[in-house]
Length: 240
Image (tube, rainbow, N blue to C red; front, top):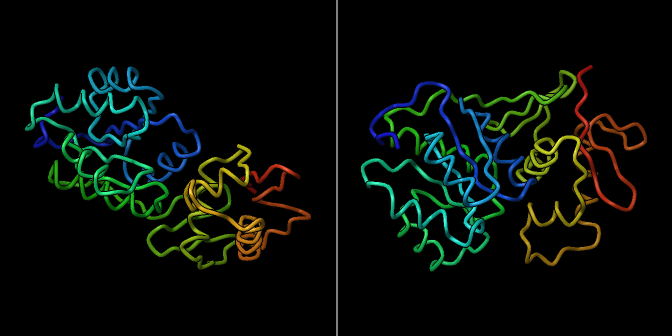
């Protein structure tokens, strides 16, 4: 592993470990706000191989993958002075889980669901703390015709700047990060509110409707968010 004191050459390598494609899409899009080359590992053996051979500068690890096998490997095989910075993701936000993660050597922990801007901020802070520099921060990403500004929580569509609520930005981020993929209402609820959330029957439809109104996205002639009847929604970015 690279020394924690050695600054990476741009772009830095970021390893994402998760077997959840919806979550992976959001993390990958969020990391695009920095100068990262991102690789996704779906299992513990794949992750451990990447950690040894690819030598990433940052790891974002879903603690539910491999029943802690990756965390044990990190703790047992790396010298403390050479550990790469690790952000752990967990669906259990209790203190016991968080303390156990820190005992295994993670540097930060986020409870799913989390806001994309929180991941961006923590990843940049970890890179600066570890290597003395955080690299380039790009607050605005372009997805089709949309420009998503994570810093000012705004979106530019058709030359008009739209200000979104935190939930609306997270919803747009979720949809845009999984462009072309059908997201069911249950998947949207699980990501935005968590698996234990007792949702109202129309909560997703209501928030999609509000987001569409701001995007001036008529559901009869959708430009960005397509309704798949009886199933959910699909983001289709337009380029002209």
